[in-house]
Length: 346
Ligand code: 5GP
Image 1 (cartoon, protein in one colour):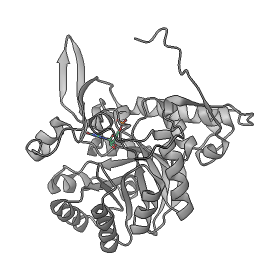
Image 2 (tube, rainbow, N blue to C red; image 1 turned 135 degrees about the vertical axis):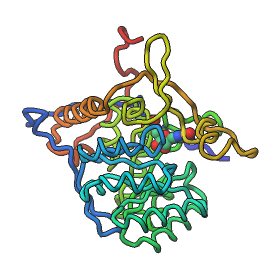
Image 3 (spheres, rainbow, N blue to C red; image 1 turned 30 degrees about the horizontal axis):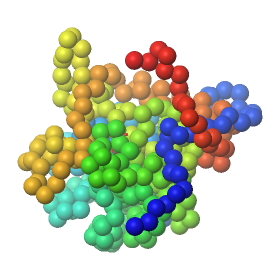
């Protein structure tokens, strides 16, 4: 046994210090970024925010709404082939930049992935997603996927430490997804005791990825626009959101009426709800590692997106970053013991 005494930080442990700035207005800030990838020859341009591949977030309807804003959706892996066909029949060529097909690492997963891509060779992004990206088998799966799809952009995760980011990039991933346990409907940290505070995970993993010419996605733990700004400030290239994009018209999830108010169901992909729905129950050898919650209905996702992008532009003006790309360089975090004033919060 060993103990690391360096304190690791989450979003709630820091704030971004303001800096002298020459930017007059938030409208002068550009949030679009351009990326070249480590393996894929594709060039990507857009706003590097992603809807999570959860079936109450990363839906086809979410992709339709977000792609218009050049925002990315990792489509959840549970759509049947026919639904993919129907969805893509109305999708424009340029919108393919803003969606990924998600897959697990089982035999059936990879067969379904091949079928989806064979039917739609214009799909450019593959998201290989497992809760625990530390298994040797996972890195081998990434390698095989890279051999099979040399031109696609491969996202792989989740991990939280630099050495595993490097291993996945060297195995063929272009982008590594970072986050174990920070998610709003995740119970991994309480069920297993395993995890890593998200801000430190981003700082350490982005450093490892950028050293090799790869990118990272900060996945999970953002509950306010300010957390997204902190994730970018810490070095994330992309930020993935679950809970913040759940509960909208586009999110999917059963609608529940109670006392005249509407709620939408939102659940973790390892929750009992998800396992009952997609795999016929919880296997005998495992426990649920996700929650099921009902969140007040939030309407159209457009207003949430405006709130997020407005917040991010404002962060950039506070620190003098004319482009989102400059935010990390312009960020100094201060350690804090307080966040917002909650006098009028419930
Ligand atoms: P959020 O933005 O809601 O804080 O986090 C979203 C992320 O939580 C997802 O992208 C995914 O990585 C993670 N997640 C989703 N479902 C589950 C689950 O059931 N268990 C765990 N441990 N993590 C989950």
